[in-house]
Structure formats: C-alpha cells, structure tokens
Image (tube, rainbow, N blue to C red; front, side, top):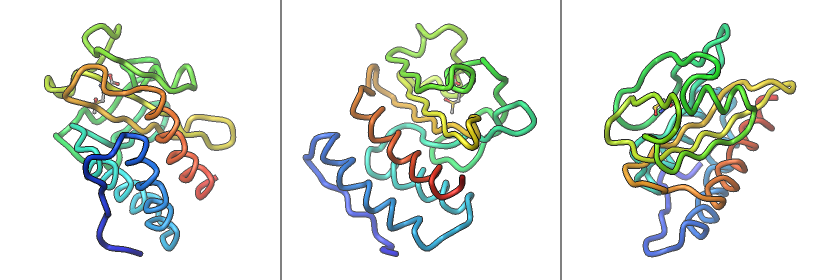
Amino acid sequence: MSEELIILSKATREEQYKNLFPQIEALIAGENDLVANLANIAAAIKQTFDFLWVGFYLVKENELVLGPFQGPIACTRIAFGKGVCGTAWKEMKTIVAEDVDKFPGHIACSSDSKSEIVVPLFKNGNVAMVLDVDSAQLASFNQTDELWLGKICSLIEAKFS
Ligand code: SME
C-alpha cells in the first residue's frame, strides 16, 4: 500500500476522482478490517478535496451511529428518516442538498456546512451505512460526485457484502 496520497492540483473534480479511485482500491486491497478501511477512505476523500467533513454513519439497532470520519466533531446518532443522512437511509438513495438550510429537517452538526451529499451503502438489500460529505460552500456537489462517491461506496460493498 502506498503511504502517500497523490493529489492532482489544478485538475477538474472528475480528474481528481479518477486519480483518487485506484488509490482507494489499493488502500483497501490489503486490509480486511471495516473500520480501518472506512477511516482511510474518509481521510483520502478529505485530503483530496478539502471538504469540511467526510465520514460514515453505520446502521446500528435502527439508528445511524457515527463511524470513522475526518473533520469537526459531529452528532453521534441520527434517527431513521431524520436529516439528510436519515433521509438517504429511508429513501435508499443518494441525496444532494445544494443548500442545507433549505433541506427540511437538516441536522446542523456544524454551522459551517452549506451543502451536503449522502450516499447509502447496502448489504443484503438493506442500508448498512451512509457516506456523508459536507462542504463549506453552497452547491458543491453534482452528478460527478454522485457517480464517483457511489463507485467508492461500491468498493466497500463488494468487500464487505
Ligand atoms: N447534516 C447531517 C448530519 C450529519 S453531519 O453533517 C456530519 C444530516 O442532516 O443528516
């Protein structure tokens, strides 16, 4: 495993994801511990894009519970259907909030967060966790993020299903 992440400067978001993706594949290839892999994936995404917050919430006993993350401290538990994360869980699909203040029920862990994307990860047809990414800028996320963060989540699903 390479211990240094290669980050492209002055590249498009798509190019950055294309550069990041194989590095994440390599990062998790030799490690079978879920928490270790989630921790490194959160760090790799945060380091590449300098988003405000990148992390995972895991479904535990009908709640989302905070997992490995990078960024400011965050709320530890989110109920089904609540906030952007709980909505992605309930609707079983990726949710993009271009302006979190306009998202009904948004949970403001940090007042610096302006936009957010949440991608659900599945195990045996159920949501097992979500990847949550917050940005300090409005409308930071689009279909490119949805596509590539989805691909990254598929790597985790393939490894742990
Ligand atoms: N804003 C999220 C809560 C988690 S934090 O952003 C880390 C939500 O509304 O679900």
